[in-house]
Image (cartoon, rainbow, N blue to C red; front, top):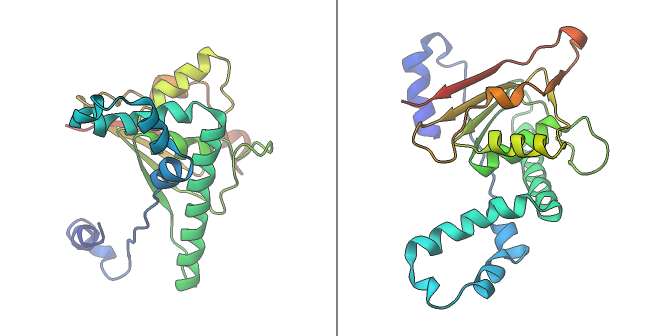
Length: 212
C-alpha cells in the first residue's frame, strides 16, 4: 500500500508531490476473537471430523462465525474494544513519531470491519459504556464490500437504531455488483441523524459507489 501510494501521488496529485505523505496502519482483530475468545475451539467442538475434510467449508465457516458473533452483545463488545484500542494506539504512536502531524485520518474497513467501524463512529455520542471512545477525529470512512446496510435494516426492524453520525466524517460505500455482501447504503441512512459543531447546519457527505 505504501508503494502504491507513493506511485499514485505524483501521478494524480502532481502539485502535492513532496508535500503530501500517505501512511498506512493495519488493525487485526481476528486473532483475539478466534484465539482469545475461543471461537476456534468452538468451531472444532461443533464440527464433525468428516466436515473438516471439505476445504471450502473449513475456510468459510470461521469467517461466517465472525458475523454471527457480532450479533451477540458480549462478542460485539470484544470486537469493538479491540478495534478501538488498536486504532487509538496506532494513532498516538504515529503522532509521537511525527509530532508535527496535522493531517487527516481515513479508515478503510472491509466486510464486517466496516460494520464495526461505522458503529464506533456513529455511537460516540452514547455514554453507556457499550461503545469505547475513539481518541481522534476521522475525516473519511471507506466501506469496502461491507454488509452494513443489512445490519442497519435488521436493527431498524428491531427498533435498535441509535446512530448519530459525526458531521466531520465523510462516508463512502464501495462494492462490486457481484459481491454477495455488498448492498446499497443510502436507504439505510435515512434514519441517521448528523451531529457536530455545525449544529443544525451540520451535514455529513454520504456517497456510494459500485465498482465496475
